[in-house]
Image (cartoon, rainbow, N blue to C red; front, top):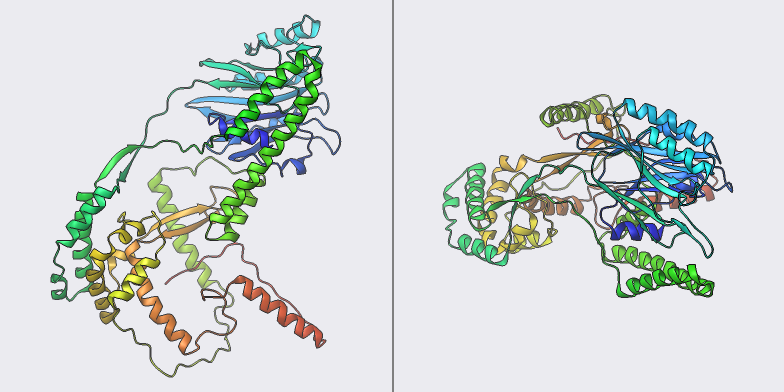
Amino acid sequence: MEQIENDSTNNRDIKIICLSEHWKTKNELKNYNIKNFILKAQFCRLHGEHGGVAVYVHTSLKAKERKEISYVSVKGLMECAGVEFRIGKIKVICMTVYNNGTTDILTEKLNVLLNKFENENAQVIIVGDFNIDLLGESQRKTEWLMFLSSHNMKRTIFEATRITGTTATCIDGIFTNLDMPYYSNIIDNHISDHTAQTITLMGPRTKQTFTWKRIYSSHNLNQLKTNLRTLNWRFLNDLDDVNEQFNYFHDLFMQHLNQACPLKKFPIQKKHKYKCPSELQRSMKNKLDVLLVCSRSDRRFQEQYKKVKYEYDRMLIQNRKEAYQKIIERSDNKSKATWSVVNSIKSQPEKNNFPIEGNIEEISNRLNKYFVNHALDMTMNNPYKNTKRNINIKANESIYLRPISLQELENIIKSLKNKQTSGVDGVSNSIIKQCMKEILEPLRIIINNSIKKGMFPDRLKNAIVRPIFKKGDENDFGNYRPISILPSFSKIFELAFCGQVMTFLLKNRIFTKNQHGYLKGRSIQTAIFNFVKNKQVLLRTEIYLWDCFWIYRKLMIALI
């Protein structure tokens, strides 16, 4: 799999990978993942029976499994699996086949499928290992090519696909009835004694889409800071209303941001994570290519080829390990990065790529209605909402929020993460930190007045809500979780309040000893540790326990 992943990474145009004779059971195949690809269709034999076929599809390509293709498989004789995707308005079906060399069952099963696809006006690509040599002359070759011709399927591979020291045969191939431009090729990828075959489709060009972005160059940022320094913020002291103060500040800030860093139109380009191979990897690959050609004509090179091939495979595995190690080392959240690596290695679960039915505005309104009503329903229908909790904590003093200083505000802004994510106003944490010195004074005035008046600016209450799909049916709104992206300025206000509130709660010991969430130095790990520790103490005193666990598959917090 390391070799296949390396080839798919270096060739950014690969969208579908078809495998024949993968030798894995259904459960084993799920644990073999190709980065950025999803296992969409498969046929597997039992353990130790070898054979089998599989189709992996790139995450950027919308495709679905055609289950009737694998249903016609006959184990050991003719095995197949396939997917359906679209190029513009053209429906294309790609299927991979393993055949034991006979033509009767192969043509019988394919005839049923091809007739069905012709009725759907679908175009078909058939790839695989057919074990029928198309370079020599035989009855099986004649029968196979005549059958393909009857369905307007054309042969695309005319070179030898399996070369040994004594033979050269074309037993693998790609056949299609596409009416769009395409070209085929073979690749020596050193995975098996068979070459890999490729077909590239030259489909219609998609319509170019655009997005709006700001250019934060050093010149633009210096211009923004210069403009902000010239502003006189004393007028804010003359305003008594918090909303008027913040709106005045925000309008001026956005005005100068648009002048110094204007929004510009850019075409949206697909992101390709291309990793250039190292010089050693490139050199060893070239050496393998040369030794492969030499070993086919002179057996004395076969042992040397096997030795270099082993070293090349070990190098790919080592490179992969080092890449995963760097991801974990560079991450701030080691646990999250580790699970991200584990999930990338595991076979990704299949997801329904087809969107929710309806236009964008209609879908947004339906999702909004669901989230609002569902949160209220969960609150009202909670069977434990009237449960009395034995928490009797009293504070000896009242909470008081004092005005913050410039130094405190500066520390708050410095604590923000350097993220480019922005709320509805398009202002990110990064841009605020860049011009921090220039906006400290107006923000201090507004925040202190907000504390004094007990008001939060209305403009900061607007958030971008993104429904994140988790699993299951994409048309079921219950499988989505709403994530709110707040304005960056609202985070500064919240941290200014949060610091003083937390100080009061900790000072007066409002939190119980069982509170592990949202506290510094405490987490789910400390909660589990305390639970196990207390359980062990009770077991040593011979007290029998009844453990009750409530597992919520769907959790939603309603702020009312």
